[in-house]
Length: 182
Image 1 (cartoon, helix red, strand yellow):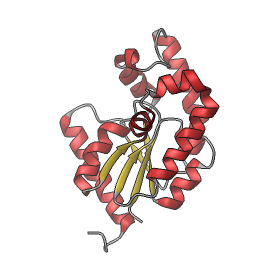
Image 2 (cartoon, rainbow, N blue to C red):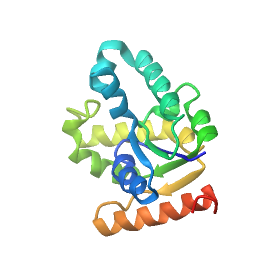
Image 3 (tube, rainbow, N blue to C red):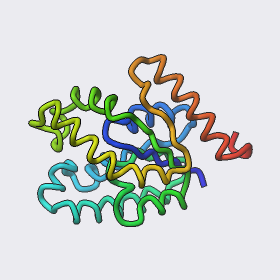
């Protein structure tokens, strides 16, 4: 079983770190949201708006179970993926889950920059954004914490920090996969 699932709040670095980590481990990289968008030929935001959250979460669950059958794959999940259906339990059964844990302050700094690209954040003041992050992080953290590995992803801002994090995380994952993989 060679599957890695990255979980964490939006802005935690699942895609950024995930692409580099997958390359380092020689795994295929899949961003679950992009996988859904390619399958449905619509953005996640459009699917959410058209079908509602319940239907979107069902689609997300089905697509997670599909990519969860692949081998030698690193999957960056959506921020809410672990919190619905049996997703967290499923990922823990199918591979190694890694929670990219990030402080609300770091998330706030990163998401302030990306506000325009994220429909849930558009139009929020700085304080509203911080309140939104804190509220959701508090609600989702118990699910994220069920991950096999918890990795501090606060330091991903420079190339050096990102490279250091990739190396550390790769070593932790290789230890979990065992010597037969090396």
